[in-house]
Image 1 (tube, helix red, strand yellow):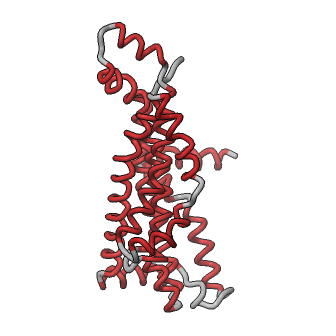
Image 2 (cartoon, one colour; image 1 turned 90 degrees about the vertical axis):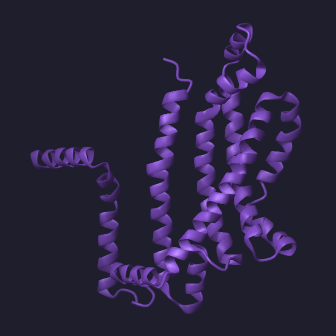
Image 3 (tube, one colour; image 1 turned 45 degrees about the horizontal axis):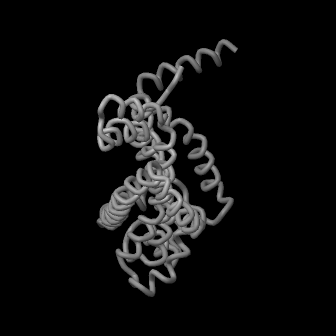
Length: 268
């Protein structure tokens, strides 16, 4: 018992000093199990490569310039789609959240299109725009848009009406109330919507790259299937997981937490 307490105390001190270690340790058993199964020959090596094979594939594709180029293409597409989705979603969400007429008109339409999955648009998008960047960008924007809009509406509606009334009674204009009361109060929910939207958009991007892409991580994985290269498929999966974990855990989650602490409407 004392030994377990000492180990736990050492682990707590270590992770407190280097927080990044806390994110690595849970993956050690997974990596160990993967190594044991692959080295034991339970499955043929061609179908179940080990971690060393994936590492070699990583360095090979990086040396050839394939992996950096594909990763850059995927990130640019995600950033473009997310930027357009935010530019459309945040103003629309504020409009719906602050106007009863806009809510009555737009809310049923939003719920209708939200029920139509992003991939369901692909057949008609291919007819309209063909295999290209426009199709992929549309899918990402469509995927990011709804979480941003819905969370923005939720954030706007969660701001107490008394705050706006108090600002108006003190002489503030409606534009100033929107900018200094409503928007800051809704900001934590907007960040949450962006976090969810980017997660959905990342998965949608990989799916659409597999179907219509000519580059990107999704295309690399699908192209590896044609060549029967399981190791490149696993490499793509690991890159997807690690990249999103880094973005979500080290960028979006702290931003959401700081935003909630700074502007969240917390009552004691």
